[in-house]
Length: 55
Image (tube, rainbow, N blue to C red; front, side, top):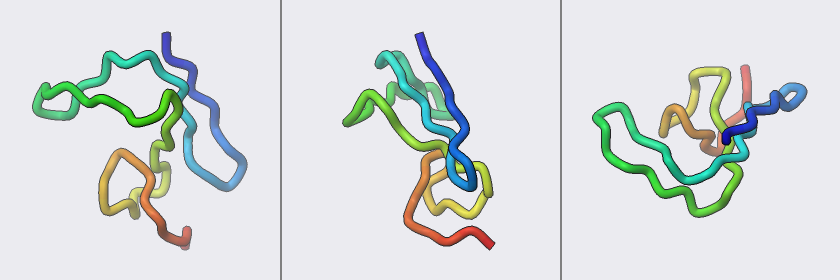
C-alpha cells in the first residue's frame, strides 16, 4: 500500500511498499520506505525531489 501526503510548501511524501517502476518499466528499489516526489517540476531527477529552492 502507498500513502501519499502533501507537505505544506514542499514535496509529496510517499510512504511505500517496494513495488515501484520507473517510466520505462524498470524496478525502482527505494533506499527508504518514504520518499519525496517533486511538485514544482524543478527537480533534476523527476519525479523525485532533489535539492533546489522553489520559485
